[in-house]
Every structure is written in C-alpha cells, then in structure tokens.
Length: 618
Image (cartoon, rainbow, N blue to C red; front, side, top):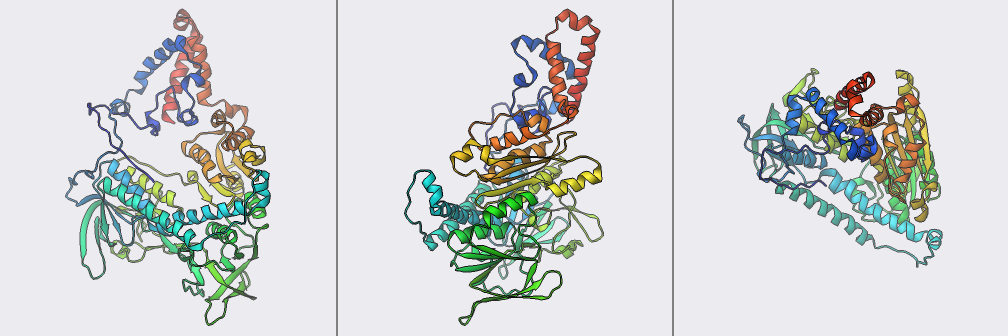
C-alpha cells in the first residue's frame, strides 16, 4: 500500500520535479532511457573530456526550450507528501475540494494522491475501509494461496527429494489457515485506515448518495444523514459477486468468493462454476487442501480470456495433473444447496441449445462467474445518469456520462463500478488519473499498460493484447505482428528452485519495436510482468529496453532474454535516442575550430538541436 512522508526544506522556493515526471527530464535523457536505468555516459559515450561539448549543446539548446513550463520545472521544491492538515478549506465555498464515495483500494489511492496535491479530501464508506479487495478479495485470497503453495511443495515428494530434503507427511489446521487470511485482511485494513488518518483525510462512515451537482449525503439508516458539498466527486463503490439466475446461495454449501475466503469447511468434492481468475485460484487452494474439483464452464474451453497458448500450457500444469475434471460448453441452470442429508444438486444445460445435459451431485458449489458493479442507491437518478448493465458510463477520463450523452460536471467514477477494468490496482490508477485532472493536469490512463495476474502455482500474468487480439488489430491497421518466446527452462534461478516449468511470450511490431502484449506463465510471473507493463506505459520500445541490465542469476533474466529474442527492423532500431547518441559522440570529438568552421559540424549541431526538441516532446 502507498505510504507518504513529508519533508520541508529551508528554502520553500526550491522544487525538484518527481523522478517519474517525464516532462522533467533534461535533453540528455529520454523517458525510455531513464526507464532502462542507463546512465547518460553509458548511452551517449560522454566522459569528462566531452563535458565541454555537452555544455555547448546544452547552453545552445536553452533558448529552444525556454518556456514557462520549463522555467516552472526548474523552480525547486522538495516535497514528499508530508502534511496531515488535509489541504486548506475550499476557497469556492465547498465543504471539501474532493469527496470520494467508497474507501476501497481505488478510493484510497485517489484520497492519498488528492492530499498530496493539496486538496481538502473526505472519503465516505458504508461498510468497512478496504472494500472488496482487502476484506473479501485480493488480500485474504493471497493468504490462502500462500498456504496452498506451501502445502503443494511439501506434498511433492519428488520435488523435495531433488533438493535432498526429506519431509514427513504435511498436514494443516483449517481454522489456523482461515485465521491467517482473516488476520492479514485486518492488518491491511488497519494500514489503509491509518494511512488516510495520518494525512488528515476525513473518513465519513455511512452510505453515500449523490443529491445533485457537487452535493452528497451520507449516513446510516436510522442514525440521521448529513449533507456535504464538494467541488469534485468520485464514485468508487466497487462490485459484488455475480450470481446468475437459478442459483440459490446459502453461504454454506453454495457459496461465492466472499464465503469461500472464510474457509469454514473444506469439502471433499466441490464444483466451481467459472474457470477465470477467481475459479482458477480457488481450484489451486482446494486441491492443495485435499478437495476434488469439477469446473463448469459456459465456453468451449477452460480459462477463457487468457492468451490461448499460455492457457494451453497452464491447463497442462495447473489442471490436468490435479484432481480436477471439467464440463465445458454448459450452463449451471439451477443449483440447489445441500439440505436434509442430500448433496448439492447442479442441473446442467447446453450453453448453445439449452438442452439438458444431466446433473451433478457434489458436496459444495462455488460460484465464480465474475462480479457485478455495486451502483444501487447512489442517487444516480438525481443527476440523470442511467447505468448500463449496472455499470456507470464514463469517458476515457473517467468523467460520468448522463442519459443524454453529456458529461456530468465535476463527477467521476473509477474502478469496478465503471467496468473498464475490474482490478483493484486499475481502480487506484484511475483515481490518481482523476485527481491529476481536477488539479489542472490532463491525464488519460492507458489501460493496455495495466497488468493482471492469476496467483496460482505457478502464476500467470499478462499485460496488453493477446496474440489473437494483436493480429486482429494488425489486420485492421495494416501492420505486421511478430511473437518472441523464451522458456523458464533456460533460466538459472528457475532451475535452482527446481521450478523450470514456464513460458514468457512477447507480442510486438517488428517494424517499429512497439510492445503490444506480454504474457508469462511460471515462477513469480506476477512480479516479473511489471517490467513489461512499465515499458508499455512509458512508450519504451524493444530496441531501447533490450539494453537494460538484469542481475544474474535472477528470474528477471527471463524478460531480458525475451526482449533480446525479438527481431526489430534495422530502421526501427535506429531510434531518435540512438541517432542522438551517435551524432553527439562524433560531434564532441571534433576540435573546437572544426566545430565552428566545418559545414558538416554546423549541420550536426543543428540536427542535435532538432533531436533535442523532439525528445523533449516525447
């Protein structure tokens, strides 16, 4: 989770732009080179003897870049969000500059960034701080998956023997496992609450309702309600488990992920309806704890949504060797909970013809068919907003759109409630993007740069387009698509861990080196994906990132080999940064007299200035 510290210097006029702000880079360092972590000397071949040339280009370029924005970047001020006064009261007569409805991960991220930007901020929560992710989703599920990972390793006699280890039969205490998940959720929930309190964010408990433009009420039923005003409002109410019609959930034998995370019992045989992220992760938990699992999937293949090649490999490792069977191309039209000594009864029908396909009798059924937006009771009718399948319509800037197709002034929606990308970290990123906008800096989040992960053993991660999606895009826009792959079996660290089953896949444009998508299946894939997602976010192309240095021996070398395996055309490989490097290196070696009188040198100097201008723009 995010944390912030505040530091003030004696000179308040001194401002150092954040390292992540690409606009603050000097002409010698482009954003892609900064991402690679390469020093200027390494890229441009500069040393002390060349410093005069560097100063010459720098000083001559100053006139080109002299602008109000540049001068503003040069005014120094070191700040690290250290204030607990929650900004100053709004000068426009509002109670708050920003009010956020929903204190999940998305609302939390927006609130912290808002305070950093000096906004007086309040967050409204009708349940508990942390939302779905912390209390009923990402956090407790990772605690259960941590247990399943340990159990799986200890139960694998061949794996342990390869290390020269002898382990007695592994067992577990169900209540102890459940307590671990609950305690982790409680700890993270407290961390989130304390981080907002420390920064002075007002946490207002009760259900929030939009009364009209820039006006919200909150409170609990029977306890009175309070009306507040805000210059801007963000809706971040998240989602709830989606339960299809015909399925009766009793919370004991027919359950959703909310119930499963409590691990009140471990059934001998459980049916999991849906084989996406949620279903896969719970199959990993239940099979490690001794259950048999049956997948019920409406589509013709398991693991829809994953890159087909990665999905095929993952199925061979995560499903086929385990106590898992499946029924694909069918719906669970009706599910009746166990009662009076009878098991859970699941009636199946063909997904296309709707003809009966038989019944299943199991000990329990987990409904993992996705999530539905939680947008009821928000007062959307007060501002003429109509949901679409429950989702609040927004534009690319998360600005809410009303029933007439017009933007609702000062109202935004982030996270699961808008349906753009139902991931906790995507919600947080959207919230930060909105705060940037309301504080005067236009910002659009590139959702293709947002990574996703499935925390099975081994893990699956992805960012960007799948191969079929990329090829479809290439056909429409007229460019070629290439694929590079590398195996974990060639990685020293994976071999040392005896976990060499895995594959990394890069989908890219060979004409310009653009990264279209990266998919990883293997040890710690969820951690490895971020190098690729950051590259996409920053517009870094393969011809630049392949120069990045990775520690040896580490799993990160899987990505290193992957980028190096890509074949980009020679035209694309001569990027503006590299052209700049070559010309500057040549120019700096010329005698001063030659620099002044040589037509070639004068042309090189002019070309350098043009490249400086171009690099500053990108």
